[in-house]
Image (cartoon, rainbow, N blue to C red; front, top):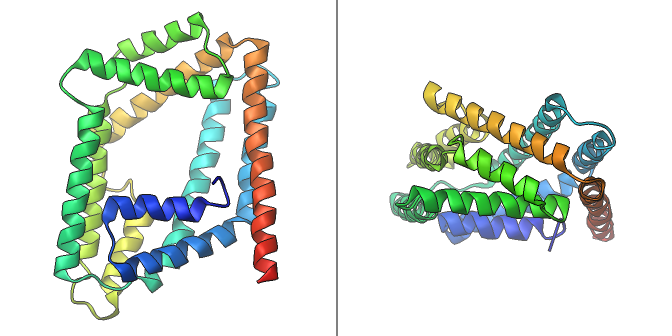
Length: 269
């Protein structure tokens, strides 16, 4: 479905996590459609420019600053989209009653158990194997192929113990609890004003309540990931680097084509 189907996919994923009441799903769909139309303009152009800039950097030796600058640009873009979506959603969102909130809370708890089971399990070796497979699959998507040298780099990085899924399982649980707390804050409030304020903070400042230990662990994992991907790019053959460049440029071109179709459809009414 790609870019044109982004609102449908996003709505399906969010509803799968939350199990929204019908009125809330309608508000969600309207906010996603509005955000998509907004993004098809200047924000989409900015995202395509980030991808093309990343591709251009691959024409020369890549360093840590390159990766950090591209990551920072993508994160800033994601934050901008999140803020716009929140502003589109919250005025439309009806307040929840206690039963609706209880169902959402139970649904999130169920999804969290599933996530933890998939990410953790009981066997550390099995966890490392799954992590290695996920990383190699991502590398194959980026580079087209993965060499023996690159597989060894992945294995060394994973076996170093730098990546700990427990951090992400706990962080996801914290975020979900913060969402439930924000929704609970709007119970029985006329117009959902208090709920909207709490949810706005949840969208805009989602890193706020991380503990210092979790923040440090996430920063360490990011550094290890940057080092790994720098090593992978350095070990890449010219054909692999070209494949990566073409992937980035292809995504940028796809964004442009799909956005033109979205804007044309909107112009036709």
